[in-house]
Image (cartoon, rainbow over all chains, first blue to last red; front, top):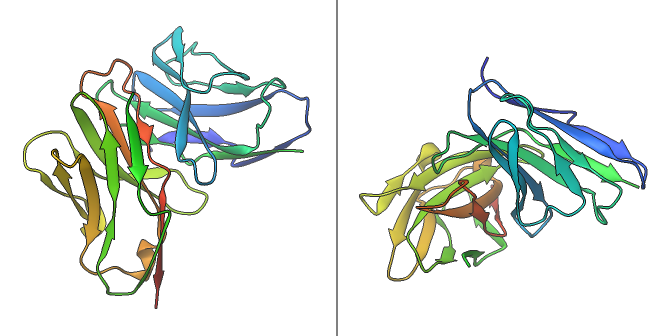
Length: 111
Length: 115
């Protein structure tokens, strides 16, 4: 069954802790993206990767880190430096063209 | 810089009524345009896209959108909505020659269909 998997669906953490969000795909897509969604603000790009072992900062990369060691995986770490980490995080993939395909998302709550 | 504005944050309509969700964009270069739908606590699903060709684009679930280059708009329409269309809708653009395929999203429009 092809698709994009994000786990877990809901994640709770205490302030000051780093947390890693998982994104796995078996679509054989080269490009992968991380977006953050807040109410009334649409989606904002955090990081993206067009190829294994390479990634670029998006518009709101501060307080986040990523790795791309495998084509199938693009984990996002929300560090303690991120001032407002509570949000809905969406992973997407693409073939390098204009279309992107989204995973189901992870809702992170930090208290 | 490119930007996308969705002119209505919330649109309430009655079932079987027509609906239009408005989207305007700002860009000095040519763009591709998209509409996505998001049901509560889920990811985004592509409704339709404009890449080139006919300015009237048909998508899934009976939705269509018209690209108007002179007005820099890409409004989404459906002639008769169903309760199941209740969701949040996002307009997005990407530059035709964009390296990285970055999408720029509008703030979203919450469509609420009432019986």
